Length: 250
Image (cartoon, rainbow, N blue to C red; front, side, top):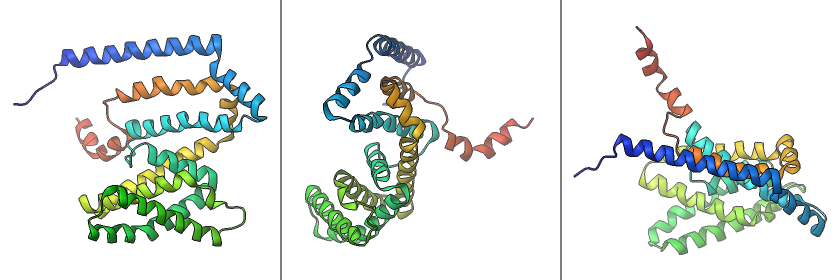
């Protein structure tokens, strides 16, 4: 027995979400204009630590997450979730996009055979992932021995875990779906990470957020609104452009 959602219920849900979003926007507007809470926190960080750089880096996280949500829901860039491209973007910011991309590619080429080999031993998922994280750390250690002096590859602690997770998901997608699908998901994950990294490194964005830290609070209503979007994505407009052209003809 199939269940269907009535148009009235759908319209009610849209109005409810719109009302909640409007309420959140109003509350955030009052909060930002009157209290400027994030600005106060940034001032406290600068006073206590002598620099607000670490606080600014944290404020980039909501902006990066919002960008990935928009890329997925509006543009149609599918990848391995939210955390993978976001942390990969962080690695690209730390290393530079080109160096980060080369590092990730080297990890993927070096560790994927080990992941495929482990499937023959029917290991538990936690043991398999732990082995991949250890392998990624060793590969990064080897890369750092040949990297230029200006590139500090060994400082990438958390991205190592995420890169290992992406390798694991790449091989899983390769086995469960197809190699082409796994390559496509990996490509779009890296593409989203590169776009986010470029925006987060943009001096205009950083200076704007540094001057008005409370702008980062806009991430909440933007993500809520994007989560209710049900129209065609940009990639779907491109994919179905031939059909649209035929239907538009008299």
